[in-house]
Length: 295
Image (cartoon, rainbow, N blue to C red; front, side):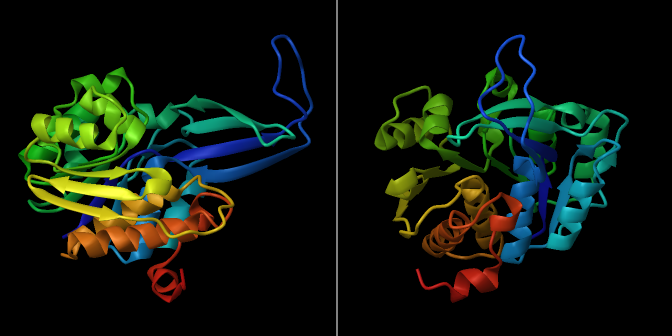
């Protein structure tokens, strides 16, 4: 089965500062770094490095070549990415001497996705193909509806969680991939994992759920089927892309028919490697690295 990642493509502008800018203050930054980002891009790269044939869909502005180059180098097909005159989605991130940060997010091109473009993209895929979605682009409710109508398997990572998700028909989601905070928000219940899974099972009985629990590992549920996966203990350097790495590897494993326990284990191994490296895209391992790692 083919995998489509229909998601965000961002440029992260990271500024090193002595302290966060105060109201009315002009502050000189000591350094600026520019990184590719966006949950869509990260998850597509993770799928590709796992070994998937994956397409990226989404929109970039005039300065989006950086992101397309990153995708292509990772083996992600970018033929379906569209261009717009609106600036590429980006973040402005201040990082102070203590490592604390504050982030300003501009949706930009990610918010220009409309129904006509979504329909054109989805027309390239067939029943049984996978579409990975997050909540960083416009037109998400329509994409879910149209993907389900076409028989695609809808994979949703409901992040960031906000009111826009209220318009999404969650019953059309084949697989939820979420952490315990998002799980509590989607289920409308407590942060207790058992309660989250019970409520999601009641609300969406036909959907599979992967609930990631940080140091407590992850849990899978679909109907009466249950699996648990622990973590691999490593020295963490940067957790930025850990969740996106887990998502990409798990979806790839499911798309090629791996048993759920094996898929969870591969995803856990890959995300453990990712947290030992700095950055988002640079931290995502290849399958060869995952298989060779002694964790």
